[in-house]
Image (cartoon, rainbow, N blue to C red):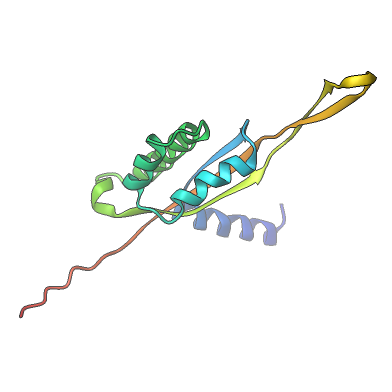
Length: 139
């Protein structure tokens, strides 16, 4: 490995140390259906986002809830001794990319066949904490 490549890899690792994320790959749900849920929780506080996902009737919400819990666990692993409730965690970034598509054939009338694409997606979730300073104002 060259020196320039090694330096950029080291920089990338340093940035990743301060980043709290979880990635879900090859989730067998279409990206469009998943984006409906990710738009709901984007920018939300973690506890509120968990409540929204828990009481959502969509099937993809269970997977997103598990992904959010995984991101919280990753945050706890890097911040031992700090409570989640005191840290003001929120969903900083969440994006859905298309994954692989399984191509299938469905029989159709008069000897034809329709093409089915069973889509999947990749979801990346990044957490961050809000640093709220308490100001005492005396009146």
